[in-house]
Amino acid sequence: MRAVIVDDEYYAMQGLKMELEDIGGIEIAGIFEDCSKLLAQIKEIQPDIIFLDIEMPQMTGFQLVDKLMDSGCAPKIVFVTAFSHYAVTAFEINAIDYIVKPVTKNRLIKTLEKIGSFPATDKEAALQINCFRHFSIQVNGKDINSGWRTRKAEELIAFLISEKGSYVSKDKIAEALWPEQSRESAMSNLYLAYYYIKKQEEKYGVRIPVESERGKMRINMELIVCDMLEFDKLIESANNASAGQRAVTLEKAAELYRGLLFEDSYYTWVVTIQSNYEYRYIELLNYLIDYHLENGEKQKAVYYEEKMNQL
Image (cartoon, rainbow, N blue to C red; front, side, top):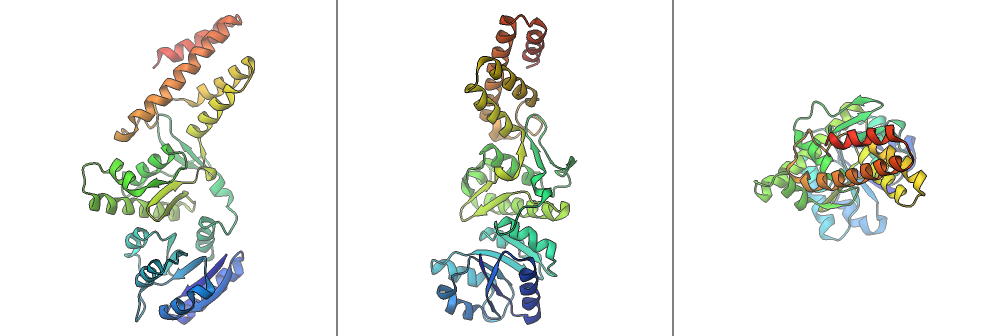
């Protein structure tokens, strides 16, 4: 992956270059103290990513991004700045990340993980998200979905999980999470929620793989362990199994279902999805009851009848 660095502070730029070279996995194709010089060479260099300061003379980092978009050039943008108050604006223009100086090696590694040029850490692989009844996000058994500046950040994660890794338009997300607000207010709140997810990552030192691109967002389901996703996989596997193996697989799925999807969170957009999962759960319970009765396993049949009665 080819990268360039743009910063009017020479020593900050050189320090960032040295850190990136020390980490490896990325080619530094150029360093620039002036945005206009990069613009003059952008087609020749064709960087995949730009590490970009914001407050610079002649042209700001935001102005550079506007010019790049107008020219049809769309490298990934990581803002590296001494100021935290530009973060929401940065995410509004789909920055991959926002790093506040001074830059540390560990923080850069997290950024490179996001853009796929560096292997994921063990902590990232340990991200466990539970969706049935109580929505929780855990790392190595520790709950990290506490202390949110706004619960809408947590709800944004839940909504993207319900879309199962597909990209969703930001307009659709904003309308679902803030249905009574104007589009402008809803979009502003969406970017703020995304920013708070990034802050939660920094707080706990873990990546929450919510990905934002131009006009759309998703959560990368390959980087999480999720009970809802596991339930789906078990149901699909059971449909292609023999009767005995199907029962074993459905029993595993039944243990995952602890209640309605996001039941304790009262999200307004989730009702139809809840009904779908409850229907599938009832279907598998009926199958298990019939299967165990046919095989003379009355005690097991009663166990699943009791689960049915709890609905």
